[in-house]
Structures are given as C-alpha cells and as structure tokens.
Length: 79
Image 1: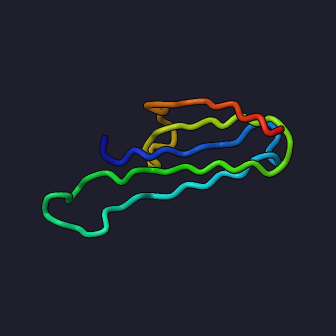
Image 2: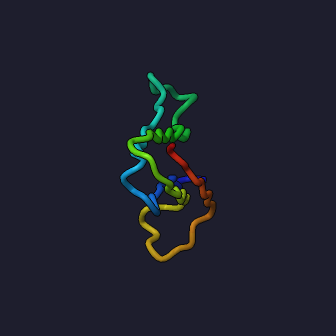
C-alpha cells in the first residue's frame, strides 16, 4: 500500500514509557528492490512504574482528514 506509514501516540502515564520509530531500509538499492516498502520498527522502553496505552495508526501523512486504514492498541504496564 503505497505511501502508508505507521505512527503512534502514547495515552495515559506518558512518563512510564518511551517510544521511538526506525526504518529498516535495504543496504543497497537495486533494480529488483526499487519501490519496496521499508519495515517500520517501533521500540518501546520502560522508564518508570505506571500504565500507558499506545495507539498505532496506519495512514498516508498527506491525507490529514482520512481515517486510518489500520490501527492497533497496546496496553503497557511497567511495575
């Protein structure tokens, strides 16, 4: 699905976790892999005790008013 990206927001105790996103791009561009999507890698790390929810959505960044084509919610508890 061309142009779609995952993003996330943290809801709840934002001080208990830290999130980051990286792209896993091919090391070398070739004619065979031209136009392929990069894997999106999210790393969530615990910082302090608490409970937070992470809401992931997948949509095109330039389609501001469009509904996400996919979404996931994850509850994280740090003890």
